[in-house]
Length: 274
Image (cartoon, rainbow, N blue to C red; front, side):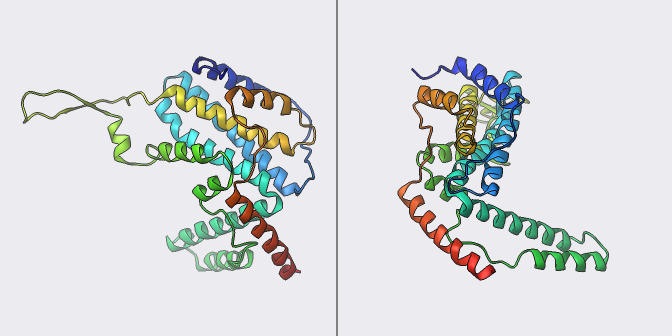
């Protein structure tokens, strides 16, 4: 029987407590993985737990609306950890490439904005950017958009649907404004049909905490599959079974096809680097 929403807070706290408990050093399963892949999965999982603590605190304080953008980031980190665990070195190389591109873009924005002001520093930064990133990448089959990444991992269509729902109130929008409006019946058409409030309307608190719990489970399971000790495997298998979700992640047919292309192009890219 799946856990009831009343169990979500305690289950999430148990996972957080277990993750924070003193343990052994990182040990990475070598199957189709590099050290970089294991480190990426571990760090993304760690960030999921950092966010989970904040979500838990906001839930306890009845500030669920404020936690939704954090749950959105948990979804992104957890699914990316699952994808990276499946994609192995090809996946971690893509993430490194995307990070370099993001840093380059950020530097360019600062330079365009006139920061720093002195010419010599601008020249040095520009040279460093050009040296560190030439625009090429390990593969053309990179899952550059989160929607595409979700489409490559079996069962993550629901995660993407929740991600899009969370996005609605994670950015300045009418969805955010609606949280502070209450509709009322009026007899006089000249009166406004809305009443404004300084506090947001309730926004499915149990559902968002449940999503935070589910993403924590998925991220932990991804790390457990990489960790040579597999110390969390039995616990995560049991918990995933209670929720009716799979412990092992799998590519969708489309994801498998793109992974084959990634691995082939990664070998070619390596050859051109040597």
